Image 1 (cartoon, one colour):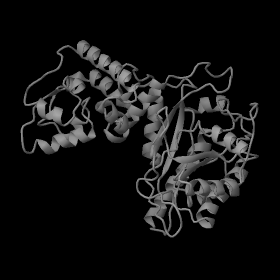
Image 2 (image 1 turned 135 degrees about the vertical axis):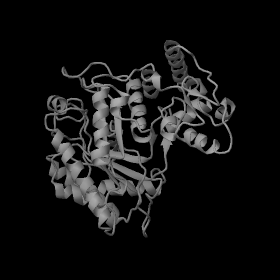
Image 3 (image 1 turned 45 degrees about the vertical axis):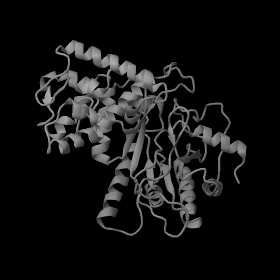
Image 4 (image 1 turned 180 degrees about the vertical axis):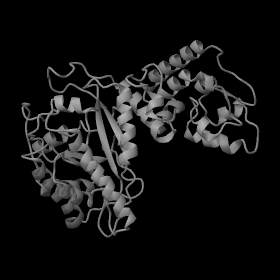
Length: 416
C-alpha cells in the first residue's frame, strides 16, 4: 500500500493539470465495480470553485525532462516519489469503496524514459480493468515520445487520454520545454483520433477512448497572443476531434530567467474559456473572436466585444431572426435562443416575454428589437460603457460565490 508521505507528494504534484474533467464516457458496468457511463463521474467543488471528482495523482514526479515551468523538472529541488502500478490500483479501489472518488486521473513525470513511464501507466489501467474489474472513469495522460503501440494499448483501457500541448508555439516549446516538440505531442493525438475513427467504423467489440481526447495550454508563460491560442484551439477541434481544450493561467512555481516573475491573471483564462464556448456551441470562428495577433479584451466578454465590432449587423428582430443569428446576440444563450424559436410560433414576442425566458436584457436590449420596439442605447460608445459597467458589476457578484440566480446560471452553463 502506498504510504501517506508518497501519497501527499504525488497528489500535490498533480494539481497543476486542469484537463481532468470527466464526461461523455459510454463505459457501462459489465459485472465488476464502478460505472463511467453517460454523465461520467459525480462532481464536487473545491473552495476556489474548481470541479473535482477523481483521484488525481502522478505515478511519479521524478522527472528526467527540463520543462522550465514545471515543478517536477529534473533540476528542481523538491521531494521525489514514485508508486508502482499495484499501489495506484489498490489505492484507487480502496478510495472508490470508501466513496471518496468515482474515477481516476493518472499522469506521470517522465521517469527514466518515455517508454518505461508509459508502460507503467498501461500496467496500472490494465490491472484496474482486468484484475479489479473496475468499470469507473479513467483518464490517462499520454507521455510524449513514448512508443505508439504502448499508447494505443493504453487507449483500449482508458476512457479518455490527453497530451498537453502546454505552449502554443514550436518556438516556445524549444525554449521552455526542450525535450518536447510540437510533433511529439500532435502525432500521438492524430494517431489516437484515427484509431478511434477506425474502431467506430468497424464496430469492434469493447471500448477505445469512449470519452475522447483533451489537451491543456498554459496561458501567460510565453508571449503568444489570444488570437494565436484560439486559432490553435480551433484547429485541434477540427483536425483531432478533441472534446475540450483547457487553459491554465501561468503560476510561477519555480524561478527561471526565461519565465515571467508574476502570475498571469485569471481573468485572461476566463476570457479564453468564454471564447472556447463560442467556438464549440455558438458557431463563431477564432478569426471572428480575436483578430490576428491580438488579445481578448478584459473589460468585455468575447461575444459583446464581437458585437460591438459589428454594430452594422444589429439590431435584429427576435420574432424573425434565425437561430444562428440569435446565438450571436449578447445576453441570448443557447437555451434562450431555442425558447425564442419555439415561443414565436404561437405569439409575437415582446420584451416582457424575453424577460420571462431569462434573456439577459441588460446586454441583449442594445442589439435587438422585439415586435419592432428598441430599448437600447443609441450611441455605440454608450453601449460599450454600459456593457463594461455591467461586466464589472457581474465580476463583483461572482466574488460572493454566485450570489444571484443570473450569475449562477452563467457560471454553470457558460452562456453569454
